[in-house]
Amino acid sequence: MAKTRRKSRARPAKMWVRIRFDIGWRDLLLSLLDCLWSCQRKYSLCKTEQAWGDESDFLVTLSVRSSFDLALRALELPRGSEILFSAITVPDMIRIAESHGLVVVPVDTDDRGQLCLSSLKNSLKPNTKMLVVAHLFGGTAPMEEVCKILDTHDLLLVEDCAQSFRNPGDVGHPRSDVVMHSFGPIKTCTALGGGVVKISSEELRFRMQYLLEGDPVQSRVAFARRVIRFGLLKVLSGYRTSALLKCVVTRFGLEFDSLANSLGRSFSGVVLQQQIRQQPCGSLLRLLRRRWLGYDAGRIERRIEMGRRLDTRLEIPRLENHLYWVYPLFVDEAERLVVALNRAGFDATRRNRMRVVEGDGKTKPAVNAKSLWGRVVFLPWYPDLPNQELDRMADCVRAFQSGQRQ
Image 1 (spheres, rainbow, N blue to C red):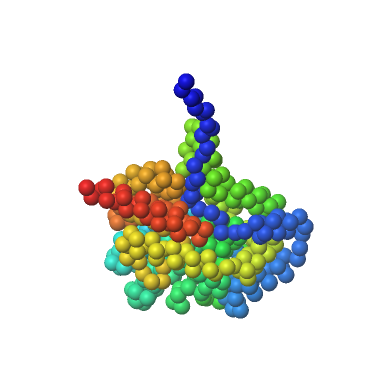
Image 2: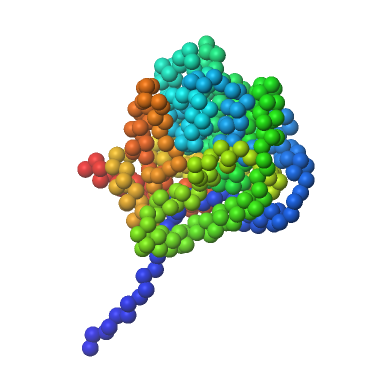
């Protein structure tokens, strides 16, 4: 008599989710407890500033968006002035510039996604008032060459270092007028929010500080909700729980990729100004201080080690000072690679919060940036990824590339 096989329940496979929040449970719990009682916010601000550095040329803000908006409020540039942006950036930065009546002009990228110097030269006009350089993916834009080009032009240089943090007290390039850092949810050394903006001009810094002190203070209740929200997301980012979540989401006919992208957002909705024009509350300030003083720099070193290992296996050239905040691949048939990696248990994606700057329609489009963004794939990327899984992911990519060549 043939043996009847018992049907076993299907179990969700392991999945390496695209990102894990760079914060531990101890910091989340302490932050939640911090929200239960009020404190001397000025004292917390002073201690947080000391944790960042000895200089007094910076301000602690709610976010990098808050820093940028604050700088534009203080500068009061004439309406219709042009601002040059690295062609790949966060859409909110464009919205902020346009809300101040400024015209956004994209500066195209090179083959690695960094600022293209020839495009920068061609974009400069008499009405150009500012250049915003974003160091993308953990790489570093060629600031020395940028500064040489700007030496013959009278405009402000702003560095967006949200994706290139290495340690507290980072000052950016000496020529930069404004240097911005972010500690939002998906950033290195995250505090689930917060930013630091260094301002070279004392006059501009005083104006920005005056405006900042007139903004309302972030609600402790709102920050507590934020801590709870990202605590739950941290639970769901495990390689078994994320696979289960994807299975459930797909079963209900939803798109997991869109859901995952939206859940990690710092700001949402149409009232962006109201959200970003706030001072960080005492609970956020104390979390920033704890993160800066206690952060394990070995996590960044591990990420660099991972990046170099993958670069070697995939034969990708990279600059020595790359920090590998994320790991993008630029490939033909990118959607097919995403499917292949997903099947292997790697939550690769083509979605990202950044976009290609379109400009006002009158300026030259960022052709190379559009081409790159049409071929981008982001791999799961964090220090907790074991070497054997990293190698297996590389093998999947190489197998896909070999199939393309045949």
